[in-house]
Length: 456
Ligand code: HEM
Image 1 (cartoon, rainbow, N blue to C red):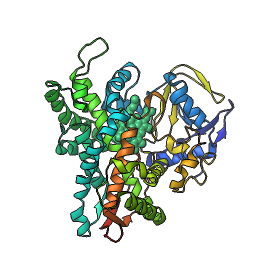
Image 2: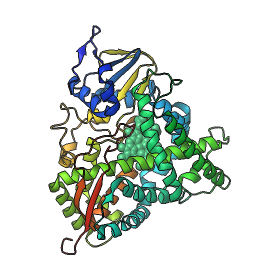
Image 3: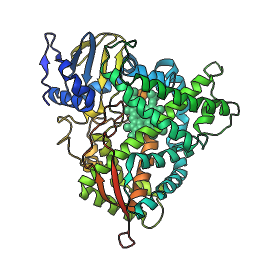
Image 4: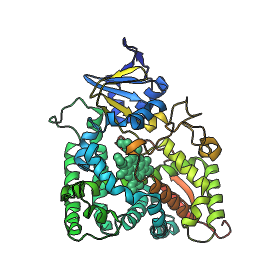
């Protein structure tokens, strides 16, 4: 698709995108990637009527926005508005409410705490993957998003939420998150439409919000009444106090519980769904994975002691997140006027920050569309710009769950592939759904067979 970028009279590349709207609503990630590729790292103004949006993709500029002067770029604007309705004054907000929540939740996610959870994480994953056995033995296809969700939900509920939310409750709210992720996109892409004008997806959004509240508020009330010293998220939130020692209400606990549950599950499920079509198309990568996992894990169950040696497994996951960064777009609103890369921004302008776009710039990545986990071989990453690859964001808002995800995803991939071999995947080319998180549009299904003794 041609997205030829025009020069405006102020020297800023400028693109009227009205004619791209249908495509933008269908496949926003690839439309923005096309615009980014044409601009090759220069800032582009996207003209959407009176609303000023800029695509900011050069790693120096991304670094400045997310880290260098992050206080001047906040989570505001049309993309965040519906998400604020879902996540409220939580760690997904900004400013003081964000800082309070981040400070309270941070201790749960230190490397030390997460490492101490790895053993129990591996057990939960092994139990979850064992449930695939019947289907595998029967030669039945595995519906990847559902089955990966079973494993991830079980794991996250056990290690982060101390089984205080049931699997059935999680299963009730998970589809609500899906529908919120797709419903919010229409408004995010059409920022000039006022909130009072009804849009497709609005009703689904409200219904989903009600489902989330119906499940989460009773849990908040139940556990706020009996706080403990434990390090699970319920306990940490239930005993939290504000800076003056004051109580934080049910709504605050609900907001952070919802934010933590959504970020801890949706992202991991998405990433581990993108993996399979890539493996099916790249048998040479899959063979190297089997070789590494069989050598490191042998006959035993996968455990934390194997992680350091699962080097290629980690590279594969990093490369999946380069091509398919689940948090593919996280815009910022400009607070005070500022000049970046020679472009003058006004207060209220929206800067589109997208790892999906930056991860595909040819000035940074050789053959960017190609799946090549060797890009993350240790000797090849040393000289890379810190913001050439940023699936977990950066600066003060950098993903709280990054270390947890790294451990969890390595354990899940190694557990599945030590027990089973991939025999087929449909489709082998997956395309992004139009949503605020990056998920395949297609229903990804795989067939597996048990690994034989000789293969190990
Ligand atoms: C594939 C896995 C994941 C990806 C790609 C991912 C990506 C991201 C990104 C890009 C941000 C920054 C958003 C921004 O700057 O506005 C973020 C923030 C966050 N992530 Fe993740 N994430 C992943 C997994 C997780 C997990 C497993 C958890 C929790 C267990 C988690 C919890 C959070 C939280 C709480 C924030 C907000 C941090 C803040 O604003 O201070 N994420 N994530």
